[in-house]
Amino acid sequence: VKSLDNSHVNVLPKRVISVVGADRSSTLFLSAALAAATGCSHTGGESSQHAVSEDGAFEIQYMPLPWDHSCEVNSALSEVSVRNADDTQILLDSIAPVQCFSPSDVSILQKCKHDASISQEVFEEVSSRQQAEDMVSLLPNRYFVNVTSHIEWYLSRDIDISVVLVMRDTSISKKEWISCGISSTLVDASFEKSMGLMKEAFVAYGMHGSRVPKVGTERVLIVSYEGLMEMKDSYLYEVYNELGIDSTFLPSFIDGNAKYIIDPPPEKH
Image 1 (spheres, rainbow, N blue to C red):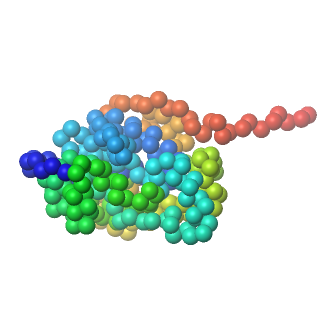
Image 2 (image 1 turned 180 degrees about the vertical axis):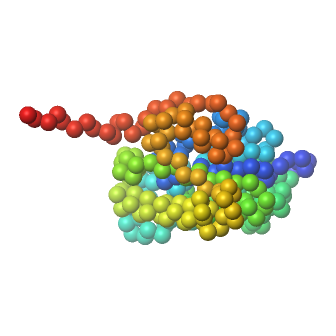
Image 3 (image 1 turned 90 degrees about the horizontal axis):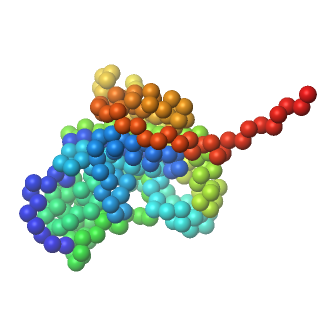
C-alpha cells in the first residue's frame, strides 16, 4: 500500500444512518433509497452497499443481520451450523466508516487507526500488502453486528448516528433465506439472534429508551416494509422527516411479498 498525503481526507463522517434488518428483510431497498435521497454514492468493491457523500461527511450503512456475501456462503455454512452453531454466530462490536473499508494508501490507514481506532493488528495486516485491498476482506465471511455497541462507538466519537430497523413479515423473510438453500436450523438461529440484537438497541435507544436522555434524542427508528409498500411516498417522506432528510426522491415500490401471497380458493356455496 502506497503512502500519499491524505491529511485532508475525513475518515470519520459527521452523520451516519445505519439501515439494519434481519437478512432478506428488504434492508437493501431502504438503504438504497436513503442513499439516493441524500446524494450519497456507493463505494464499489466489497463495501458497495455502503454509500458516502462526496465530502465524506454523510454516510449510509447497509447492515443486514447477519452480513454475508452470498447465498453460497450461507448455504455452505448450513451444514457447519448443525455441528457447531458458534461458527455462524460471530458478533462484532461495530462497523468502521466506509473510508476504512477500502483504504487507498497507508496515510488513510493511519487516519483510520488514529481517528476510527482501527487496531494495530489490522493496520499492520493491511499496510503490509503490496496493493490496497478492502479492509472488509479481514472480516469473517458471515457475521452479526451488536447494534447497541455500534451506536455507542459512533456516539463516543461525537458522530450523529441514527439506526433504522427494517421489519418485514417473519415467515416471508425466512422463506427468502430458505430459497438460498439455507437450512431451517440456521435460518431459525439467525433470525432469533438478529431480533435479539435489534430489540436490545430499540430498548436502549428507541422511543423512551433507557439510554435516551430526553424526548427527541432517540437514535433508533423502526420502519415497516409492508407499511412502505402500502403507503409508499406518504410513509417514506415521514421516514425522511424523522431522519432530517430534505428530499422528494421516490424509488420504485415493487412489493417483494406479493409472490409469497396466495389468494385463498373461493368459498363453496
